[in-house]
Length: 312
Image (cartoon, helix red, strand yellow):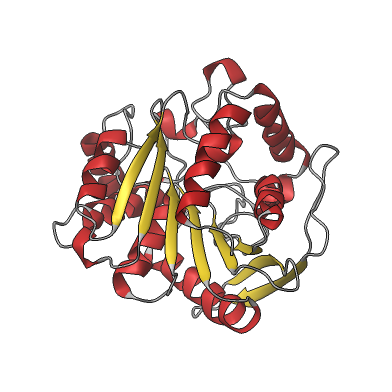
């Protein structure tokens, strides 16, 4: 296992790279940075769908500069982890229970034995939904959670979420779940020009991450399959249960961009109101990928993070 650099995205120094194996035998790539001798704890990063560790090198540096150790891994089917389908570019799972197993393996085999406590979670998009599932079940015992644009519900999708969920359910039920989804789901960073993207208003960070996709195909993935969409719809439906939010006792801060079109801002705000120890903050002017945003918007993200998880 290794990490890959491009010209504008060097690998942060001092990292340890390896693999863990999930309960069902899937091999997952992870990386960790021990940080200073007396680290303030470890921030465990859980990326979103289609992302890789390489996308978060800048964030690793931001956290290390705050005195934290950092640990991160690639979900199955993306980054440097095992790919299930014959076409490795397709993003696919049958159920978010597969992601639950990934997080369990990462937490038990990397975080607990090798990362200084306390352990904090920093999760993005679909990674945020998996983190919430773990917090509800008490499987990953993070002291606090920071969620960037968690996938509670889709944004203004084409087609709308109820229709998209019905279509994906039918296609999956007839055995065609491994077909790539059409419509808005195909609009990945490699297909959309900066002017029309929903991820960031920062042209340089967009260019850098587009370069990662183009120059590092071995860790990149395209759009999701209908099976992945069906699994996401089931997981979002579960998160919408009235008992889901109140069952989470981990203090949780949710941050989302006001201009986010990938996930539903109103659904996130409503979900946060159901948490026992949680709140949502909307960053005006920001899109979906908050950690890829312009400096002024990222500063707002980090100000909220620092207030919620202060360095010791």
